[in-house]
Length: 338
Image (cartoon, rainbow, N blue to C red; front, top):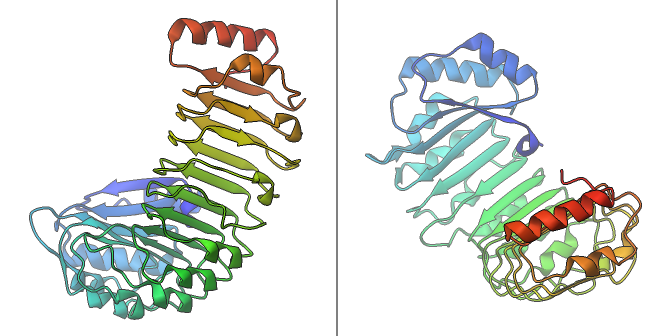
């Protein structure tokens, strides 16, 4: 997916190095030509449109900022061949319905803070779209009902919008889902996403994710979710390979109660009230364990039956003297910090 590629940004160009762009795209990089103000000319946009026609979605155009004026979406009519488009980090915009004229889109990132057109998803041409990013608006009221018609979506990021979010459950091809700043919204629709590989909960608020049943998810990220205090029966995530739990200050226990035969990478960062991490013997393929600023006892971790595959083990308390002692102890046991 495009989101996973290395990104190269070309900022506010007045002309373009076409050979450089060609080499970077052919090197499988996600090249983004981006403008923070309206310095683009019709001639430059014509050249960009030609590049959009030449390359696939690895070549992108972005309009953002424009702090001194309102961005006019009619500008997009000059790049009708665009496949990857970022129109985000904007405060005001006019003529947003011009988006409906873009029939080649495969990636769209949309973020206008003062967006008024809450039914915009009804109008976007969704036939080719594989990646959709919706960032925060003041109203938080984009109607997600129409996302069910976006049958080719593989990757979705939703920032603070929850109206009719159950429609996401109709995206049978979805592989990546990031729910950002979603507060206490039921997420049982995730259970319908049988091809989902990666699930992120970033910011927002909820006490747990107990609604999610047994699944095929391989990568799970729970970061800075206000009120998150319980992670029961992790074995529901039977295919889990990577688990990142960060800045959840009410979480007190993590327990791998059953064998997790695929988990290789476990990171627990800045969970200050976490006092119990049990069941590490159920992680036979664990190769990396990183723990930072918790209330865990490193001796309790070491005394568990750890995976023979564990090579990278780092444990930090944020106290320099103690951390140096722990680092030395772990090195003596054959573990690497990185």
